[in-house]
Amino acid sequence: MTRKIADCREYPSEMNCTLTLSGEEDEVVRAASEHAASVHGHEDGPELREQVRAMLKDEKVGV
Image (cartoon, rainbow, N blue to C red):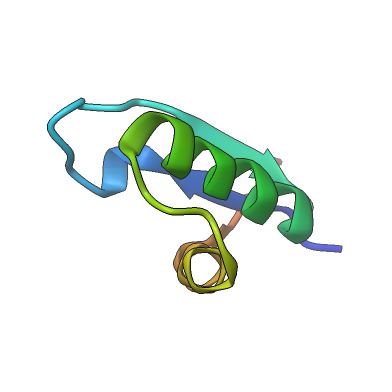
């Protein structure tokens, strides 16, 4: 299974957040959504989780 990445640095905010999360897709969606709600003030719910899922990138595997 391809690991996914959510990187706050790619989405400018007033907080200049530097958090990067990686893992299996469902884990990253859950953690990134909870982070977006608790740190950035977004409302956690199905709509936010779908937005997060759409922004995920595949983790590049080092050789």
